[in-house]
Length: 197
Length: 197
Image (cartoon, rainbow over all chains, first blue to last red; front, side, top):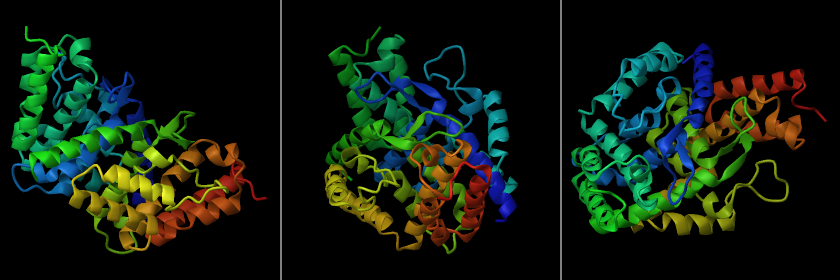
């Protein structure tokens, strides 16, 4: 690493500050204040740290944490896509790839390439690390919505089956967490905060 | 890990959501919006990830990232102490230790102990990992204040010598980053956004 690398890294550090302005649809726990992407990424990183032992297979925890820390940085350019949006595909759009190339491209080249690959690995969801990282990304809003009387499910009229279909990928990362999550989904139906239509 | 561990971990995940409400004095880049502790912790984690190669000695990056992710969680109970506050000692107060025991104590016992030790290691600032993590914690607000025409230095009338004394611990983590930081401090004096009194 040279001091010219450091200049590029500082430019990147400044650029990613914008993630603190990207609002998600989901709201903080027991709150009506929307969460932003930086807060969300921090929360997933701490969750990965404390829940790692529940992963279905042995995982490289540092890689999982890298994934969740950077997974939403593309939204600085591409914006947040609501997971239940039926008009727009959530994953790995061309727009997001262009964003990844621009934003990670601010870094020294080898580092830019490393982070683009980690982001792509997360998006593809094939490796054990990507599966676990994605299970964190699905688990946090489930906890938030159940604490908020249905939260975005109620607000955007999302029914049980759609929630179940999106959340079941948690199982690919962790059977234990999925058992817990499935229980929360069923409980939400019983409480009337998630509708079977 | 058992499902009873998972209940405790979920309770902890909900509790630490409160970090998103703890406002720091420093403001986002080129902004008058104050940063909260969750956003700050996320930013430091990404900084550690991309700046690790500038560390003075070989470091365990996963441990550094754990440190910065959890270093401010005690502020949920103890509140944010401004680094230039002359009335209150910033580091490792009794109040913060009680907070650490309560909040990390929500987790399964072995995990609680691990995180309390990591938090204490950060606070003591002796190991290579703690020194590097602390250099990130000092470097981010320096970048913010220089982007905000002096930011909290101007707002709270903090002079060059106080800034220099607080920031020079960056050198213990990374000579390269300190050289850069020292240049920013001198430049701030030349620009008139940091006063020599």
